[in-house]
Image (cartoon, rainbow, N blue to C red; front, side, top):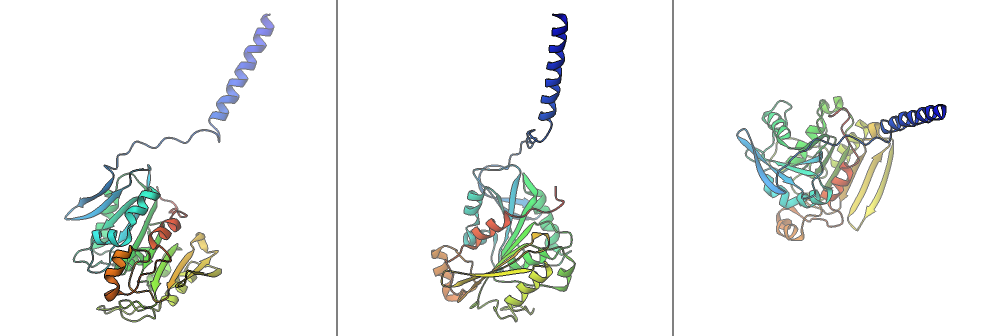
Amino acid sequence: MGQTGGVNRVVLLVMALLLAGCASGTNAQAPTPAPCDPGPPGTRQVTVGDRSFLLHVPRDFVNPSPVVFTFHGRGSNAQQQLLLTSFDQVAEQGRFLLVAPEAVGGRWDFRPNGKDAEYLQAVGDAVPCADPARVYASGMSMGSAMTFALACASDRKFAAFGGVALTLYRPRCDQAPPAPIIYFHGTKDPIVPFEGGKPQGEPVTLPAVPDAMQRWAEHNDCTAQATQQIGKDVRFEQWSDCAADADVDYYRVRGGGHTWPGTTPLIADAIEASLGKTTQSVNASQLMWEFFEGYTLPGAG
């Protein structure tokens, strides 16, 4: 009996060690994120220094949370950007934090060391419960220009980029890592010409949209290209098999104006006379989020 009892004790000890090994191996549960309170759901204004931004917290919050920045156009503001894009509704479905920064005098400063660089750093620091590996930039018109300027940063803080109605590629972009990009532009844009040239009221000269997108595809070392027709007015062109999996998605809206694809019909009708037609064949906000979900920022955290 004594020998049998000793064997049993050895067997139990071995089983305990094996179970402990399993618990600490691949089947172990991931550590629970530290508790984080982003504040009440809904949209609120947050002050940083002498400026502010809008923050939207979804009802079904995820911790840590992806964050989408959306930059308004020239002469617009953060609240109008949310109305135009309905990004707050997409945030509710996608369970991400939404940030709408506010430019000074309705104009963004694109310089790497300009006044908006410090402001955006302060905004990022003020966003609660953010996942630094899943922060994304989007924008309309001059806000899209800001988005592309951020894509050209060598010390990038954003994992992917989405723009509408203004694209650019500058020599300094050559030094930036591959940038995942999704972009939309109407062929009848009366403010930022699709065929390139000077935007209305601005001294800069922009490339033709197809040329700029081709430059980004080359920058990302993409080797595959495919096109698809969506509805009657949208041609989707995608460059894939890119370095760092940084695809370039481009939506060419035939007859589209200086507008955000998929904005509400009420807004689309109100701006058509001055800015042109809005396609309802695609929804830029929803497509941007679906694109963003595929990317994380290497080395962030």
